[in-house]
Image (cartoon, rainbow, N blue to C red; front, side, top):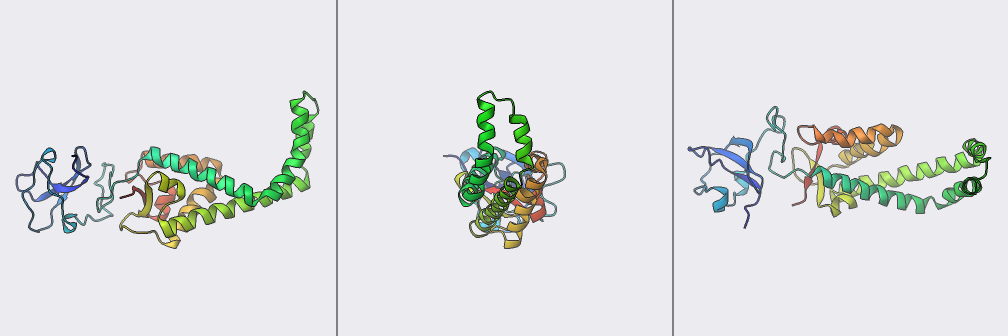
Length: 244
């Protein structure tokens, strides 16, 4: 039976005055002075060390954790950070769900746009030669542009409601919940505030809809960030963790 991840007395410290983070498979470089409390004798991980009590978790100052040059694998109170691959899967799931909901809610403008574009598409598929000019006309068609603006507004509203409310009241969007991830404040456990949920959405989906490249930069940022935070997490002071 494997030992769960957590803070345990450092086996390399003879005085047993230091805690070291065990990630469930091996000891890591994250250490902190142990609080002066009575603890049972610590054993090596393969000997199944005791399960630390709540007060055994070090109160590591969030502003100083992790140490300079070291990438965090957990929050200051020891909750493991989310896997980047699972975060990508969660984003894809959420994007698909938002698209489906927005398409249903915006069925009227979507149908109007399709009615204008369909003849041009048919001409292109049958080998017609006038479809390039026709597509140019569609781009200037006032009815098409009005329907496009309406559909865009509906999509933005659906994205905001979908993301902000699920993060605020459940700590995770459906995509994150499926991938067993959740969002929390970097310094404290529990649900994010309403303000944090709003800032996360603005810093991700809203900015991404305005500047397409922002989506890519925002997602890749945790690859080199010390706390594995995306840019929208940094703005909101949140982090994505594994659900306990």
